[in-house]
Image (cartoon, rainbow, N blue to C red; front, side, top):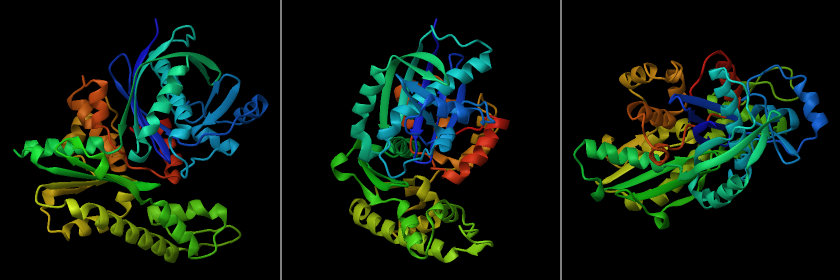
Length: 410
């Protein structure tokens, strides 16, 4: 008899992250790098495998479809794999999803102590988040996945069937949270507007809801991405291509003293960081003014999330305060309360939840719902899941170490 799983994924530009539910009912985290290699030869793969020091499937993942082999996640870095932050998520989505399925298959067997049985198919209920600008790509992804009956993961064949494939636009869960908050205060959400802003690496979207009805014609996804901060910072001085990750790390983490390529000592790049962040904020502020002010009144709730929102959080809060809105009417990111954290830590989720919540605000919100309502159906979980904080590439190695020591929720 085969195994059955529920799998939820956010295919981020820097990390693939989410969770899966086993047949036992426990919720397990999954975190992988977002890189996907090009096609590999068997000899090249075997050579690199011989030097790998990690046995964890998340950190040493490769898969085969037919005769084609590809590495996925952090392991793909050995083959020139990139996270393809300038490329649409759907172009690499199928490989990332299959790798995640392979990971949960191997991890669940390790937990249960059972051997790998290639003859037994696995059944998957799959939920995937896509940006509003890429939501139409769900049909191609679904068709490709359903056409696959078998693939190999780390050399082991896996027979596969999808019980359900569900897609939700990033940000929809934030709207449902806002509606719930209104109802908790005794406010009829049918008479209110919800503006959900998703500030990400590649772009920024504004999703407009009237009540719980999504207004696609009023929504847009052509706002600036945080990649603009990198681009403007790079223009401020002469950087080598290999220095780009160091500038991105400085933009995100604030550590502006680095050793650049060809140098023998630390260089302060704080001026480049300031140019990048100031330029990005100027673009984002102009975009928000053009796309949200027309919907603002005393019935409007604004929620801003996404990785870039965390980086310019203080500017966003001052910007929203300038409209004279009640503080209860706007929110930048999400923080779990102490009681919520205690509830998470006493559940089937690992104690590392508190660490994770600092990193990934809205996925933490989803986990809170899972603890409160462990019998949620797939569609309900999908509706509650929204864009998670996009941890950038320099965080991956640190988090991977944490994964090897304890189960880090991600």
